Length: 315
Figure 1 (spheres, rainbow, N blue to C red):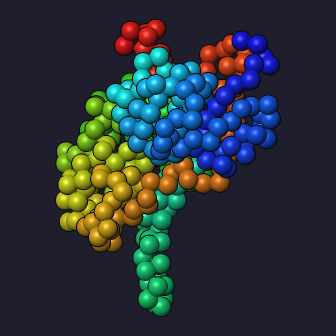
Figure 2 (cartoon, rainbow, N blue to C red):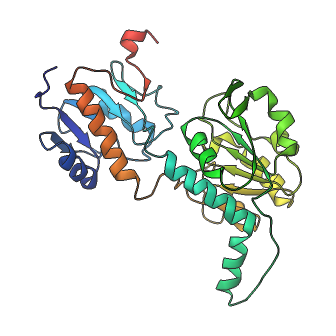
């Protein structure tokens, strides 16, 4: 493709449109949140709304689209609805930093009893109390993709013993990355278990009664992956008894209904799936889209492709 080829891109918000105009002033940008019929039947790149359900991609069935650039890292449920001939890329490089920040915030708030202090403050009470440290604890990181590595780097200054676990065991420059078969051995020794895995059939309800029963009394489970990775009934049983503590950025169902019993548990900290919702997202998302535009103009393959053209792959 000629470098001066004028590409047409749809974006869901005025803010993202303005950010792209600054990076790629010669671009033809259409604002479309995909809630209604497409304003055109041909786009080079379509950017769906952030946190939109995969079903929205059915809007593209009669649209000629070379690339769908998601604003999320996860892509569970997309394959089932993505029209043939469309390439789908995720938002790797956009959310890792913010999600890692939130993960550390959830761990520190839970370990140091920040919710207890906030509740006491709301009641006008001075309520000092001893709490767990993060230092000298064993942290088990279940999942070692981009977000897992970002969490690892931020834990490096907290004087923890870090155990890393991925689907397949291997070693890197810092030591052992355990395989999934080591999970039953590692869960009982971990003081903090952070789960950051993609949602797949294999990881659905990975956090079940057996998983939670293997964690020792008083330990903390942090889930920043997807709500369906955990069995909510099992979470309620183990947290409701007071045996385990939970810090959850994701839930099943989601959003968590008003007055759900998880909200009432003082040993449970819930944030409403806001891992990527920071000021860092918009400029990073715009830079990723700009990178895809430049690559498309050069005739190069897009980056972050997680679902290639099934016409070509036969899947």
